[in-house]
Length: 142
Image (cartoon, rainbow, N blue to C red; front, top):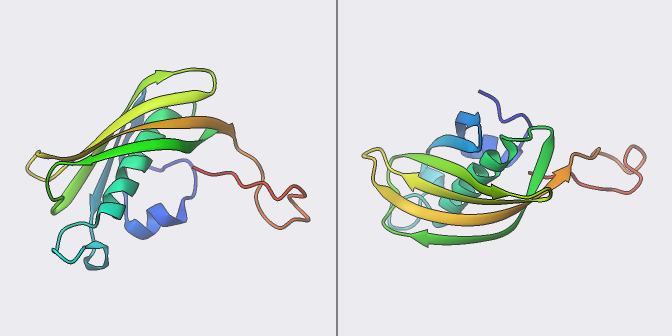
């Protein structure tokens, strides 16, 4: 399954899209050694990225021609995130321009490790590239 857009950082981390429909998402992630912290568990930054992308994908799942940008995100870490992780995102409410979402990260045993809520703004996809192609130098993000 494809994310619908090319997100180099997501590819670098190795996220695998499992579900992308109806306001729900699931992204699976097996952290690599370089993604661990000094305690040997998945680094909080990688976990937050998994939650951010899980929420963004859930928001985009109801209008796939639009991009989204993160406005705010609140994160709670409940226990260390070890092994294969499953990020499950849900669109809780949407307006014409905003998405209110949540995501939970589960470990391979099904235990909740981290939770986040986030607000995203829907944005039109704009051309990216050199200034000659994109005179306003506008960046389209996800």
